[in-house]
Image 1 (tube, rainbow, N blue to C red):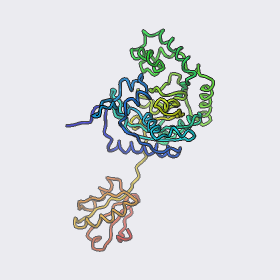
Image 2: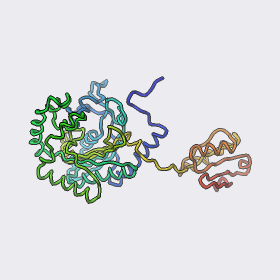
Image 3: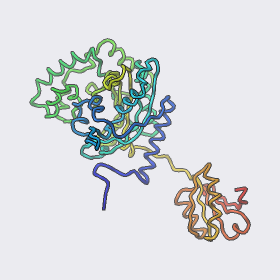
Length: 404
């Protein structure tokens, strides 16, 4: 028997209902915040992610589905959504419209080759939003507020962690302080951290090794070394969160898993999904458009992992909806098709093609949670009528076909 590849999962039955429910809620809220839909290809040039996510990141170094295609192009299946949206933003020359602001939302499959575990698959889905052209910290706050609205609508409890990653002015001196600290404990750090000291020492702060995390509690903190502008923005963000009664904690080691962030970084964390506790994250990336050869454009965004929150979502009770239609004599089946076609303009309709007794039709309607069971029996066929039962109110009626 052929099965799905390891780390890749079908979405069907109850999972598909939960998935579409999450996407529908997130899409509705994104639209209310002024975002429009964008879809980018699953396959992109590998250099897009090397340039944006960063060659020192685990994603590029270890996890990408990368290959040479039949045309000799070095391509990969997208490991995250932001870089593709930025590429599309530049390709459509939107970066040249410097006085305008653009907001996009997207959802789709992402791919990373890593060890499958709870909340982490090799093919997974993200919903994300990207805002271009706004450099004020109010947009950072609004993005965080929007994610909170999504989780509140889905009935998910969370903890918000925030940090500031500084800018090109405050990062270099901090980087030197951090390198000096890390060099003093190289022998106790893991192999990956020792490699990162040479390539991108800030990434050490994102290490998941428990011994490294313990050592890094004593490391220099970037929020203690921010320039006046970054410090002012970070303090203003905290003020806005306080005013909105959004609870948060400052995590001075929060750097996110990608190299393109600056200033605001944030994560929404759940204690209900095991070690993979981040259910959404994002931040500001004012230099990324430039990294991908566009004109300097401030930007901020987020992404949430759909699979990570699926088991946390409290689905509403499913209301009865739509029509079930059937006949008691097979010779009458043709009478159902025009009725169903007309009703489908405003509602869902399921036709049972096989002739059955009334009791069996009622069971069939109940099985699909239909609101109405519509049956044509011998008398109805003679009189040009239909028998209708409202299964929610337990009310029966016989209606002329035109009236129905």
